[in-house]
Length: 175
Image (cartoon, rainbow, N blue to C red; front, side, top):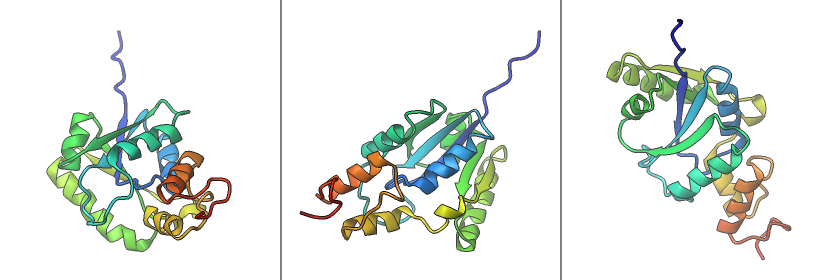
């Protein structure tokens, strides 16, 4: 009798405030390498910026965006990423790299994570060129100034952004 293969699980950590098409691209392509991806929403960000969405809202948005994909699960975590990865039985961390400027920080984090837990590996994925400039911060800023963000986020995210900034979904502008 052959041994049952173990499920390959990856963690894709971040703030996802909000989740963008760039994040979605990395997650969907990451599924080529693993059986399941846990989108790990950090409870305490390493960057000190004021969040727009609460963690429960972000988890809801991720679930809505990936309603068609049962292999994607959203969870919050706090503390060390490697501890969370170990709890999830995930030996792979997926990170997106938009530009060379992302690499230095991400490379340093990957090496530190491996130092903390030698069994973990980090897979760096470049987003599709359409999303290489995209960040959640830019999306928040555009939405806050009344700009249209439908090209950058899924419809449920766009609707929630418009609601946060009290704009009509039909017009995309402040009343």
